Image 1 (tube, rainbow, N blue to C red):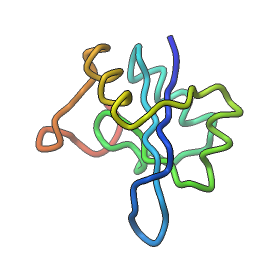
Image 2 (tube, one colour):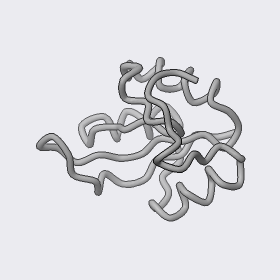
Image 3 (tube, helix red, strand yellow):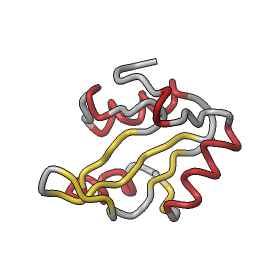
Length: 92
């Protein structure tokens, strides 16, 4: 079981963002996000959006750095991928 994060390449709200995902469960993902101090609103259905300013914190806490393409592969492989139109905001 591991947590993964892609580089902060996604613009929004005047910042750059990363995606934090789990290869095991949403419970693992939510627990890690809570350790980072991420608010529940940062959860976007199958990942957390992480501001570039918090990227280093995620890595220091143990998130593995991977590419954005690999993030999708991890989610699909774990059976945790939710298509954008089917995602719900909030905790699962």
